[in-house]
Structure formats: structure tokens, C-alpha cells
Length: 129
Image (cartoon, rainbow, N blue to C red; front, top):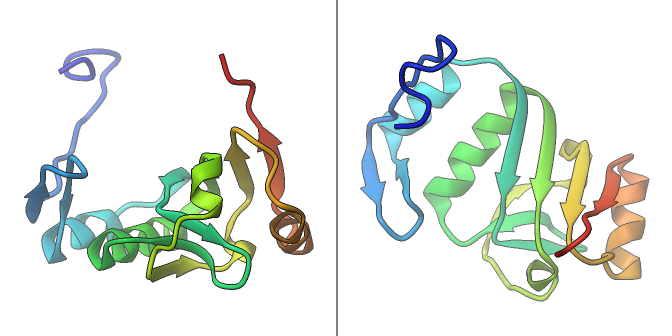
């Protein structure tokens, strides 16, 4: 509602299945729409961050759309709070090499920070409060 009619924004709605638990459309139709665009920036909220497997999610459809967003964007920011360091999501989205900037609310554990730095990902710890 706030984007409609302001600053000449065009709002595109993804088809597919509307998931109330994540407030997003998923499925082949949503994936197709995302794949038709080229973005300057993708900002991803993820299910977990794993020092071995990288960026992960709990849902295969969400992960598929996130991978397409990464492929179709010039820059990728992953936003993950500290709880994501110990979460155990099963579906891999990408390795750290796909992440340009990693934004979090607490410094990542040493092994994770080392993996991010080795992949040339910038780590930003946001001020809370």
C-alpha cells in the first residue's frame, strides 16, 4: 500500500503459493518472476549460517528463490541475527563466496568470521537499540 502511487514505483506481485508463515509467495510462478529481473541489490534474511555449508534455510522453495535472487543481483547482502549461528536449517542456499556483505547483530564465532573473510565477504555488526 505505501509504495503504490508514490515516486512512480511499479509493484510486481509474484504468483505461486502464498505462505502465511513467511508472508511470501513461493513456487514455480514466483521463481519465474524473480528470474525475469536483474537487481542492483539482493537483501536476504536466512534460516541459519553454517561454518561448513554456508547460508541455509528451512524451506526448499525459499532457498530456490533466494539462489535465483543471488544469481540475478549485482550485490548480495545477507542479514542474520546471532541466533542463526546455532540454528540448524537443512537446505543450502549458497556458499560464503556469494555474499558481498554479511550484516548481523553480534560478531560471528571465529570459525565463521574466518570463512567469511576468506570468501572476501564484508562483515558488519549493526548497533542494536
